[in-house]
Length: 157
Image (cartoon, rainbow, N blue to C red; front, side, top):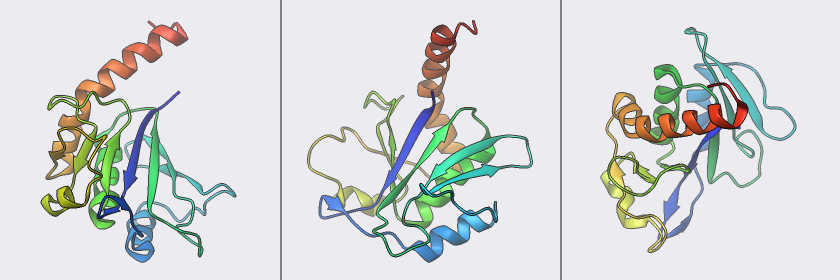
């Protein structure tokens, strides 16, 4: 069970290709480990946290319009990495656990220009995010709710 964040690049309301070279450079600042055969990378950080990064197509000729982070623990290192990948790839962060209001957004933009390229339906009240620290604040409420639910389901209360 994970707290899932999806990153997607949009143009004229639809998916658009992401610069592989730039996103791969961000990834390589954190790990040299290759993806498994399904396009998953396990990224470990010096603070002891880690995240599963799904980026099928990042290192080959397949279409690459977005990626995902399967978060099982929350740290500023992970959130900074998510923000850096999103900002570098001109991608919108889609918070799967979001409710669509300002305290728990679904669509988190890394640049104001992304708003004009969003689909016309399904992404209510997009919020602009300016940094990893800001992203941590935007995800905090949703992560806390997810963690409480996870602990209840797994009996870790």
